[in-house]
Length: 378
Image (cartoon, rainbow, N blue to C red; front, top):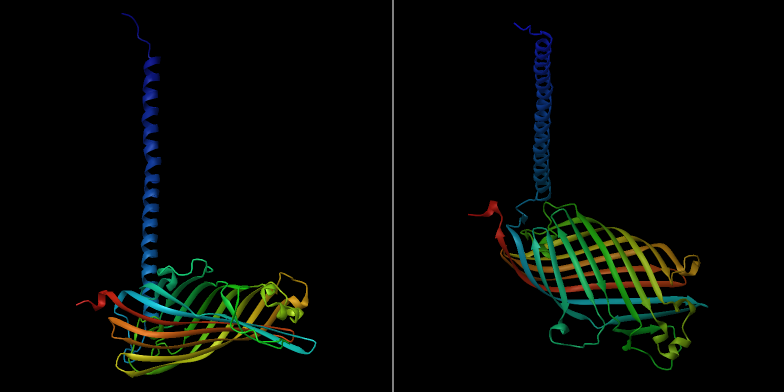
């Protein structure tokens, strides 16, 4: 009988044993990894849920703080959305003044007041709209200078923010002039040598926000039920670019013009802190009138003709600014109608040069609220 060698059998048994041991070790190695991955996934899920709860909680706290009003004085807005049509009249005025050889001169420019129509949509505190010139609807002057007006308004009971951009045309008129030796006054004369661009931000804070509602008049998002007033604090930032071509002045005026007024461009930034007072007068049911003044101390940084090193052409000073608001509104919570006036005045004065820029808007509007909030639905 042939003899069978035991060596191959022993080798085979050894390999099978090693393979079984390796599989067991692999399973033991993978099992902790699976547990680790499960723990990580669960941890990430817990973190995500925690962040979501924190965001929801923070949002509720913010809404509670912002909307914390005395309902005896203010009725909160019951609707989410609003639609409004508006007719607006725009006014602006520029005064350029100087002093040379003990003689003061000033030039006053203003265009005819422009009329615009606007369409606005509001979501709670935010009103976003677009305005366009009335002449554009009826095919007015095709050669008129392009004008642009854009604004974004965010209102709440405690604070508000206005963002705006304005670009004027070249349809100014010489309204008056002083300090010139002229054979005849040049008034109400067309002047195409002045253009301007303005962009800025206004923010205000209401101290007596529980009883005084600024948005009740200027965004129609609440209803003022009893008369109340409040102190206000505000911050304003704006950039102004004024392009002036003095060569388009009448020749007689050019020959007598002070050297300080012979510039082509003024660019300045204005930083202003203000402190004022506003009052809402409820004179009949659903009717409220407002008047507020917010004077401010403004720090202005400006250049004329891009000259940075000439002291005469570099303006860097502190002056006074003023924001005036007035308005009247009827609002029965569903429908509203009213009018408002907002005026901005930016003033810089020194011995040899002064620049005063004023612009304002008179608005007449009508609209309605819709899509009631969940807590006010029947």
